[in-house]
Length: 120
Image (cartoon, rainbow, N blue to C red; front, side):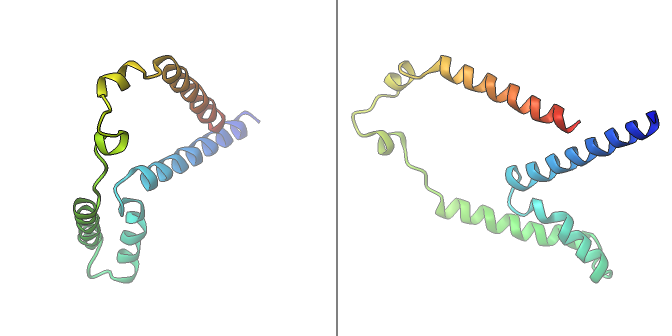
């Protein structure tokens, strides 16, 4: 009975870690890095003469194209464009809600720890 419980907890833990790694790679990673395992597996299975190194060449092209699109087309607004010509950065720093930010960050930390503990 004890060995079955241990194996189930190890299985659930590895599934949660795998899911967390997949989500963090997909959303927080550079575009193209979330599909790297799929591309490399397809190269190994369907194009064995190219091998797994072909994955890096394809992903370098994806990363380069995403960087070039970011460089040429992403132009975020400046502070003056967002808040008007008479806006002062010092005034925004003075009026910032530091207590609310600390409470929100603490609550988010406790919530994420609770969810992560449930997976294990």
